Amino acid sequence: MRPGRRTPGGRKVVVIGAGPGGLAAAMLARAAGAEVTVLERGDRVGGRTASIEQDGYVFDTGPTFFLYPEVLREVFAATGRDLEAEVPMVRLDPMYRLLFEGGGSFDASADMDRLKAEVARIDPADAAGVEPYFADNLRKFEAFKPILQKPFLNLGAFADPAMVRSLPLLRPFATVDQDLSRWFRNPLVRLAFSFQSKYLGMSPFKCPSLFTILAHIEYAHGVWHPLGGCNAIPKAMARVLGDMGVDIRLSEPVEEMLFEGRRATGVRTDRATYAADAVVVNADFAHAMRRMVPNRLRRRWTDERIDAKSFSCSTFMLYLGLDTRIEGLAHHTIGLSRDYDRNIREIEEGLAPSDPSLYVQNASVTDPSLAPPGHSALYVLVPVGNLSGGTDWTTLAPAYRELTLDRLARFVGRDLRPHIRTERMLTPRDWEAMGIHLGATFNLSHNLGQMLHNRPHNRFEDLDGVYLTGGGTHPGSGLPTIFESARISARLLARDLGLDASAVPRGAMAEAAE
Image 1 (cartoon, rainbow, N blue to C red):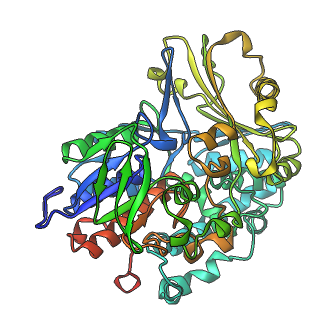
Image 2: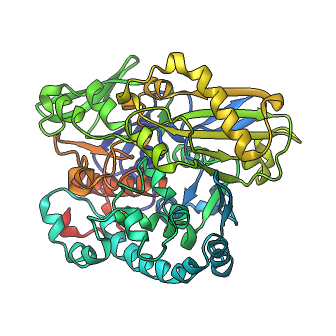
Image 3: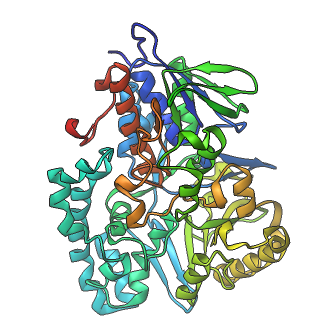
C-alpha cells in the first residue's frame, strides 16, 4: 500500500496533540490508510518540542538534545520520506561539557581515546573502566531494545523470551549510580555517566540501573542538533502530514472525548464535533484524562489513583537573547552543583534548590540562524521540584531568576545581565498552565512501579478505541522513546481497525504480545 492511500470504509482517527508523539502517530496511521485529523491546543506544532521566536531569537521550548535518530528515520521512511533530507542535522563533538562547581570539567566525546583521557583527568584509575562499561551497556541496550519496541498490554509480556534473557543484564534492583560503581570509583566520573537520568526527571541515586543505557545511546549513536532547533523536527513532520492530506488544526483544544459505553466515538472542541473510529491521545496523560474523560469511565487510572502516582521533577526556565557571542561556552553545558546530593534531595522534596545545578544550551555557536549576527540565543534550565512541594512560584520567581543568573555567571565566568536584550521565563506554574500535571515536565516518574506494564498502556486499558503516545505511556519520556510509543500505538491501532499494519515499522514487536 502506498503511504497515505485510503482504505475502503475510510476509517477515521483523531489525534489529540501535535507533539512529536502525536505527529508520528498521525504519519503512521495515515500511511496505514486512515483518514487522520490532528487537534492541537497551541498555536504551533511541537507541544513541549515547540519553539519560542522573540525579537529575532529562536529558542527550543523544551527538548534540545536529539538522540538515536533511527526510530524517527523509520517513521519518515514509512511515509516515503528521508529524515535527513527533511531535517538537516549536525552531530556534535564534544557532545556536551560538564562543569563541576568544585573545580574541573569533562568534555564528552564519542572518540574513545579522547573520552578515556577526559576520565583520566578526573581519576586515572577509572580510565580503565571506560571500555568495559561500554561493552556491558552495548549488551544491555541490545537486550533492552526489544522491550522498548513492544507493547506491555498484559502480564504475559513478561514471559517473552527476550524479556527473560534481558533480566540478568538489566539488574533492575540496582540504581544507575550503584551500577556504575562496578567500573568507576570516583563519584565525579560516575556523575559524568549518570546525569542523563535527569532526561527522565530522576536522580541517578534512585533511577533504575537499566538507564545507564542513556549514556551509551549518546556515545554510540550521537547527540544531534537539528538545524533551526529541535522544533525543526515537528515542523518537518507537519509538512509531511500536509502532503499526505492530514488536517492539523491549531488553537483548537479538545473539550471532551465522546463515548458510547466505554468506547470512544469522537471528540468535541468549541468549534466542532469530530467522529472517530479511534482516538490517539498525545496530551499530558494525567491532565488530559482528568479533563476529557469522566472519572467513572476510568477503572485503573481514576483521579484517586493518578493522585497516588509519583511524578517527575519540573524545570525553571530562562530564555535569554544576548547581544554578544559566547564562543567559549559549548553548545551544551551542564553545570553541576558542588553538593549534588543535596541538590537532588531538594528537588525530590518538591523544592527549588538553594544552589542549583543548571543546563545551558548555547546553540548559536553551531547554528547562527537562531540569533541575529553576533548575538546568542541562550537557553537555561534549572531542575526544580514539581508543584506537589507547595512552592509559591508567583512570589519566588523574580528572586529565583536572580539566583539562576548568579549561578550562570559562576559557571560561565561572567555576568551576562548587561547583554540581555530579550528574555522569557517559565516556572512550574507556567508548565501547569500549559496542561502539564503538577508542572512535571518529564511526566510520570520512571521507577520500577511505573514502568512497562505498570505505565498507562499504549492501547489504553480503561477505554476502547483509545491509544496513548508520549512520555506518559510505555516506553517513557525522551524523544526516541516517545517516537517508539507512537510506532507501537499506531501498529496496534492499524491492526484493530483492519488497516494496513504492515505500513507501520514493527521493530521487535512480537505478534503474540499484541
